[in-house]
Structures are given as structure tokens and as C-alpha cells.
View 1: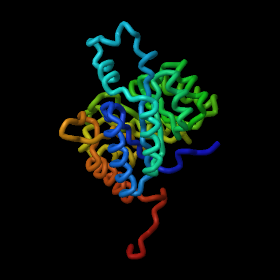
View 2: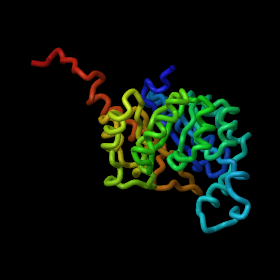
View 3: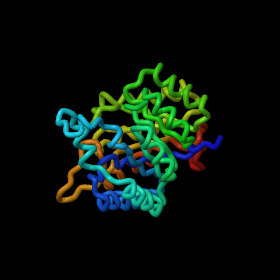
View 4: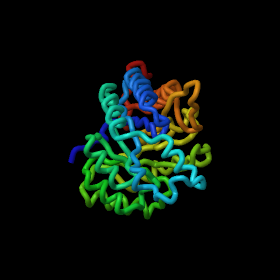
Length: 274
């Protein structure tokens, strides 16, 4: 089986930060394409697909009780819009990934020829959706926010038996996450419990926090995910999404940690070492 996770990967998640604007979405992709090239990293640009016509019950479309419904409907893009965004991702030299929240969205991901597929933490117990995702046979990245070890065991067993190439992301599904909620020791636990499986860090701490990625890298994480976006005169970002400049500092912190830790388990002795 091909190992799609041999190199460290950086995942830029646009989520709904395109604000339902194709132009704004294109600008975000271009900006983070520049970040990836500037820092010479292997990066994935990630979307989220929801088929709102089937995902949201008609009786709840105008409900104000659930803040997510208005957020999803107000930022809706067409499949044609997403195809244009995906083409820009390719032009920027980035890989592509998408998170489906329903079975129909998996079909759309396959038809648009994405490189990776993502399992969101909130969908990690949705077995009909997980079965559909596994049938796509795309390299799969699985977030584990809110799951017990028993729940993660079930996911690992399921995707292993299906023959899927997959990685696990330690994730704290609190937006934003405080330092005392990050539990980065979980990375050690996941690496020991699932040897041979790439382990990543899906992060929601404040975007000015560059220490957490350093610790995650030092603990052996090899995938790093952040929500990203752009600020304009009309658009602001939430407390867990990074601007390009914040992402640059975040990645620089990773690179410095990578240099400090070294590439090999047994160190190479400098020529000037006494």
C-alpha cells in the first residue's frame, strides 16, 4: 500500500471562511499558496462539503435556535464554485482535501477528484457516512476530537479492515482551545497505541500561539491542521483561524523545532565537538 503520509503535511482548512463568496475564497487560496511556497512546505488545502438540501430538514431551515444552520445557509457555494476553487488550489501547487458531512458529499468529492478525504470529529461515529467514505478509497485523515480510546480503536479497526490508507489527528473540539485543554500528551499515546500510523495535530488554539505546534512536532506529530482565512474591511476572522502572517509564524515555529530535534534518532556529531 502506498504511504501518502511519508512527509510532514500542513493542512489549511478554509471551512466557511470564504463567507459564501467565490472571489474571497479564491483570494484565500492564492494567499496561502504563497505561504506554502515561501516556506517550502507540502500543504493541503481543505474544504467542507454539506449537501444542505438533504442534510438540513426543511422544518429547520429557518430555525434560529441552531446557529450553525444560518451559518451554513448564508455561506453556501455551488458545486461549480467549488470546482473553480479546486482548480485554483491546483494552480497554487497545493494538494486538495475535503470533509463530507453526508453521503452525497462523498460522491461529489470523488467526482471532483480530490486528493484526500477527511473525517470530522463530529462524524466519527456516523457509521453509514464512514462506510461511504471508506468506499471512496482516498487517503483518509481522521480527527478524533471527543472520542474515547475505545472509539478510536473502532475507527482504526474499521479503516484497517477496509484497506484504506489513513492517518489520525489528535484534536480538541473546543473553539478556541485554551492551553490547559490541548492535552498534547495524547500524541504520545496515539503513536504508541497505533504503531505505523501517522499521527497529526488538528489545532484550534489561538492563532498567535506558536508553542503548541512546536510541542506537537517534538512529540512526533507529522500532520498539522489550522483553519485559515483573510481579513477585509467587511470580514473578520474567528478566534481560531489564522491569517497568512500568523500561519507563517506558526510554520516557522515548526521548522525551528524540526531543526532543534534533528532528523535522526542517533545524533550526528558536529566536526567542532570536543
